[in-house]
Image 1 (cartoon, protein in one colour):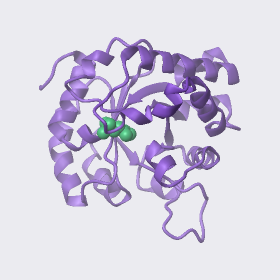
Image 2 (tube, helix red, strand yellow):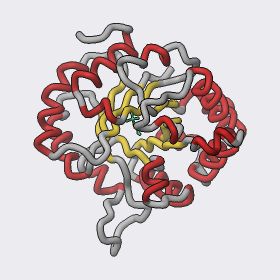
Image 3 (cartoon, protein in one colour):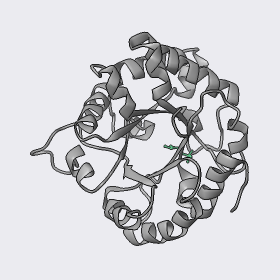
Image 4 (cartoon, helix red, strand yellow):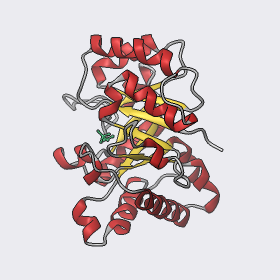
Amino acid sequence: MLNKLVVGNQKMNLTANQTRKFLNSFVPLVDLVNCDVGICVPYTNINVCKKALKESKILYGAQNVSEFEKGAYTGEVNAQMLADVGCQLVIVGHSERRKMFSEQNSQINNKIKQNLKYNLTSILCIGESKRDRTAGQTDKVLCKQIDECLSGLYENELEKIVIAYEPVWAIGTGQTATAKQIEEAISIIKNEISRIYSKSIIDKVRILYGGSVKPENVREFVKIKNLDGFLVGGVSLDASAFSELIHLFVDGKGKK
Ligand code: 13P
């Protein structure tokens, strides 16, 4: 069985110095916790993570990567550069990038392939909008995102993929999906992956939930079948609240 995994997506927040302070408080709070913990920071803060997490098992990574290998792509950062500064994780296909930067499934697919070349784990975000859900299109939308983002990948490469189910309407809104909705989404994701690949691979792909998860509501999600962890936005900026969330998830106890 794979370890549980909780990853913070700090989005476009914190300077290098603020990240250093954050990690100084956060690391001792979670270093011994019985689950994988990761943090995805702005590019400028990756080297801070590299230094601060040298002796720690906390994983770190980026929130995006170029779909291109290298060359004249002003402003881009490639997978090789991320691997070179010790990243293990890269978030791809976040709904904020899909919406605000018009990122397409085909580009996300290229990004995942670049990550694979450098042995980086992709956290692939998928999720339906409120409109999709109301129109009864959730399963269609999730399956299309999976099919197109994973297109051309071999089954053994799925071990480097984590899927984050993040319904767009639950991100930063304070409105979470219900346990039933998350369970349904997980089962759609698992069915689609086993349809494309085989049943045996499905337990090797971790599935996270993201969208307004906080210490106050995390216990509602603990019982969800086949849920392997969370991708956490806002709360991951606060070392104490984020560690509390992780402890509540893993051992049912809040502060250490
Ligand atoms: P919030 O936890 O702030 O809703 O953000 C979720 C998210 O977008 C994680 O990638």
